[in-house]
Each structure stands twice: as C-alpha cells, then as structure tokens.
Image: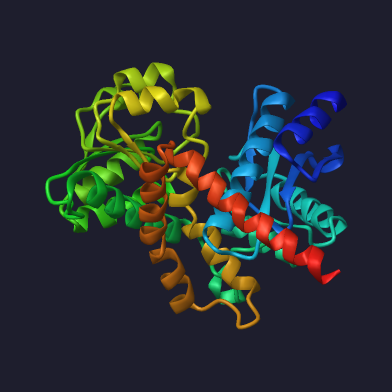
Length: 359
C-alpha cells in the first residue's frame, strides 16, 4: 500500500497523504494535501463506506487535486485538500466522538488542511469539530460560520450554465430548455430552484425517493430512473451526485448539447475528451463550475471575516470564468478541462516564483 501511495503522490503532485486510525472511536480516515503554494489546503470531508481502502485513497487523491485547481481558478488564496472517513454516513451512535477525534487529527496537521462539509457529512459535524479545532469550516452562522455551502455551489453552477448556454445557443435565456439534473441532494435541489425560476423544464433522477418527491412537489420536475437519466433527450445534462458518470458507455447514450453540473470528477478520465468533442457536446469543467461552496467557506478565513456581498460577487464571477475557459479552449484548440487546469497551474506557478524571489 505504501508504494502505491507514494507513486500516486508523485504522479499527481501531492505534498502529503496522511492516514489516521483510532479504532476505539471507529475512526479510519485518509487526508490528502495536494498543494499549498497559494495557501492552506481546503477541501471537504467525505464520509462513505468504500468497497476497499484503495477506492478511498483514489477518491482522496483525485478530489484533493481537483480542489487545488478549483481554488486557484476561482482566485482564492487556498490550496487543495480532501478527507475521506471510511464509515457509514448514516451512523448516529458514536458519531460525535469520532468527529471530535478527527478534529484532534486536524490540529496535528498544524493548519495545512482545512476541512468542510461534503458528501455524508453535515453542518452539525463541522460544529462538533469546531469544539476542538479551528481548521473546520462551514459551521452554523449562529456560531459565526458561513453555514451550508450547498446554496453557493448551486448558485455558481447556475452561473456557469448561463455562460454555457450563451456560448452554445447564443443566449442565456433558459426558457423551455430541458435540463436533466442527475442527483437532487443539497446542491441539486438548490440548483432546481434557480433553473425553475429561469423557466427551464426539469427532469430529475436520484436514488432517494424522498428527494424525488420533493423535486416534483416544489418544482414540478419529471422523474426518470438513475439509469434512464443518460438517455433523456435534453439541452443540458447536469450531473450533481457522484463522480465519473461521464464515461465511454454513458457518453454514447447522452442526448444533450451541454454537460454542466455540480459533481466533482465528472469525467472517467481524459480518454473521453475526443468522444465528447465528436458528439459536439460543450463540456464545462466541473471544478470551474462548482467553486461556489469553497468560495463561501474561504470567506470565513478572510481578515474581514465572512461577508455575503464578497461571496456573492466571487461566486457570480464563475459566469466570467466559464466564458474565459471556453474562449481559450476554442482559440487554442484544446478541450476545456485542459485549459482550465493550465490556467490554474499558471496562477500557482506565478505564486511559487514570487515566493522564491522573496526568499
């Protein structure tokens, strides 16, 4: 396992990968710190029962690298990190004890990694950790935090969809545009609200019946099964659940003009670039679109503290970022994700060079 960790770290450019194991409280955690050139590594804490530890490691490595590019492209002074707790996200007994121990682990990292809410964790988990560490962000506004980042993630995704539509259709008017939202959890549900207000026609899928019922009741959405979501004839396919749903098999089935959603790591790997281009689908890089949540959390660590006006301005700037990425992709004849990564790396390289000059 050690050899795999080191080889993966070398391949992806990680600075640090840390394992924490405290069986007395049921804690099995992996933290990946990808890059801290721009600032401390920020990224959510994912809680999930993985098939095996190698799957959890892969999640940590991929997601922490994506967080580096997300923060850099969003203009934040933060690096990229991620944590995975290998545990049942529905656990109740012993949950507080486990998160308190994980908070102690964060203190041992000395501020190199800041955690936040992610799949399987919630604001109350962050508040629990805040009793022990200051390196957990997104706690409740009543306690001085920024709260649930999901509404801001959804707002940024919506802004990116507007930019993509303007690019693809010549207008950002979403009236009667068919949008397939795959996954209507926290981010997906907030996104539905934006889309409904804009006049879009909504189709949804989710593994949770309660979420589907809410989407129908609140937004009049049409429901399809998770498997059928790839076959929906739509203008926009918006993956907002798990990653890697855009792969060689599903791309062949997609009947959309735009892929733009809130999920992380939507593409299986770079081998699908040509397949997407061949179908003339406009792809918006996920880490450029879904930076709204991390932007809100970053606001907690500003000297001025969290300010809604600052967060709103930064998140709405995702509209401009998507236009910038798509413009560069067309001019340079490159896939949008390649361009987005290069733009992020350029900012990191400039910061590294400036730091070297100051020594």
